[in-house]
Length: 155
Figure 1 (cartoon, rainbow, N blue to C red):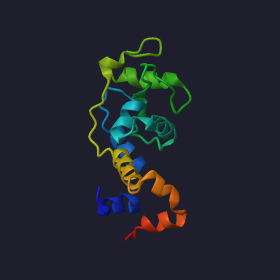
Figure 2: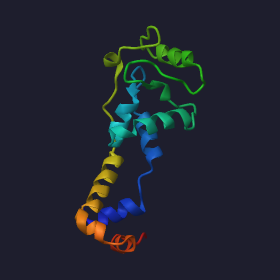
Figure 3: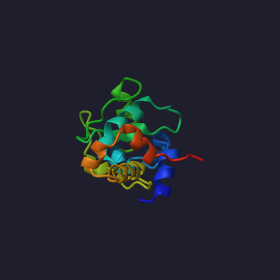
């Protein structure tokens, strides 16, 4: 990874909320996805908890389709209203068959997202930065030395 690319990522990190909102808008009517599928589309499976937090706490406007995000087990999970029956009602209205609060995920799963996988880019940048010096050399330098060697000017 070039210094220019690193500088761009450090000075202008991706807007993760906007990236996730764009992914949510890609889930078609009558289809569902999981927190993990969305996290993978962002570039990191470990982001699934953050995805769950965002889905619950973001602005739930008219076009919000976060009711289409379900658990990996096929269970519907919660709904922002606090009433999971509303989520079930919304999914049924879109043609999703729900039985005892669960659906057959393979029948309705959408995981074909278009996105830039921004977390993968950030992880690659982090690995590139941590690989600049060897472990022994890193331990020998002071934190001030490290700050100076990695200083970027944001424009």
